[in-house]
Length: 589
Image (cartoon, rainbow, N blue to C red; front, top):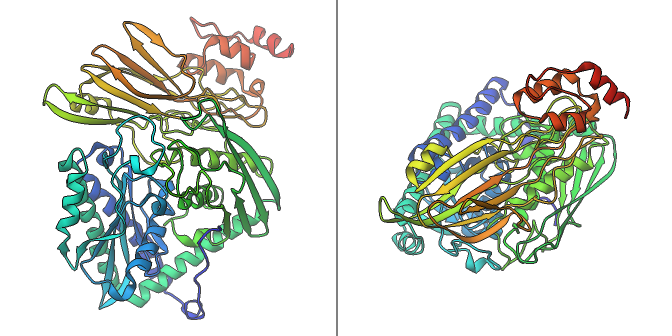
């Protein structure tokens, strides 16, 4: 199948000449609307994963379901919401849609993600005419299903909500809300998050109607057309700056959590011809038995995220015009186009490495516009048990944990930063987690020597050590323990993601991968997770010795690694650079 984004320009649309001032007001207006939707959701949600980690996004869409603006935050939702809106249009039909309706679904094969992502869509009517849609997708902490372990089919992962009416002309579907309440473990929080999402989509409706009332429906529609056309033109112009050719790259995932040690191959092909790009994912792995699959909208999304980074990373609002010059080939039944009943709980993991691989494929063509490999995982930990302070059941998602990003030709990689799937998602504050859950964070720090050496160094990974204060169950399911973030142009690879468990003062670190499932922790036990570092860029011996010495002083690089990889001799006590020894060491290569 190929990407669903197509040009929607008509003769009538091309004939319009929207006021450029109004167009810029609308451009900033729709961004403001989606950002206010985000703010209101964050302020009213019940779960830390929404109001603190910001695992959600919001959006405005045309009457045809095209993206007008999505909230800046989670890049991988770029396609899922639009396709969900279009599916709801097909399901209900425009003729049956009424003011006050709100539609809901968490269909993983439609959204492309997991069942925890509940999507609400509200049709916006202006002067009796459908003018667009307000939409919100947010991560619920629990949707039923297995709490830990490895699922092998979607039916183990929780409640599946088909496309349904949550509100019918303003009247709440009490049967549906009762069914949801009955199938989740902490219904008060689920219902609270549902109400928060309703607030978000109603905010989008109210603010977009104010824009339409002030400037008129035709003027706003014309401005949106102009914004999309401009996004298309800019993307095509920047695509033309990439040399024509066919570019390929390969990488892999450690395993699928079921067949331990069996690599999951990733192979991408990028074809550039003139002002168009094709990303061909035909040779990525078939869908796997473990829960790392995602739906076909994620196949489109990871390609669009890579394309957006390469062609228009700072052009806003994020809209469908920017992707008209991109074609995506992704056959059904792949890890990013899985079909029922493939499990999808950890849908977000594999696409990040696909994006990394697209950058890797283009590293020879546009070396100044790509980065080396990054840690490419949320590096989450999950805990559940009974909180002795409240005698209530708790579920704690600890993360995402930031890690190292790859270096560029012009600068070092950033460290301690959340992976590309989640963009603006925040890590959970240690103090807040300690206050809410029976655990103690013993250590939270950057990991020295985790960034790959290079002329520009890869970013550093992060270590978090967490001690249990009561009996609980621990799960972590991260990837890229063995497929370490690669370097470019002679840069060295970063470290992989890793996990350790401490019992009776002894650390166990010899796990075959980054997956430790349904493991009991007793009071005093602890776990340690480390995110990987980013790959380096360029020959490490070309990094100025003074910069290496400063890295040693800051604790980013040890004196031993400085000498071994960079050829720079630094006193580990005084951090003084030994220029003569350095010159000799580098000269003896």
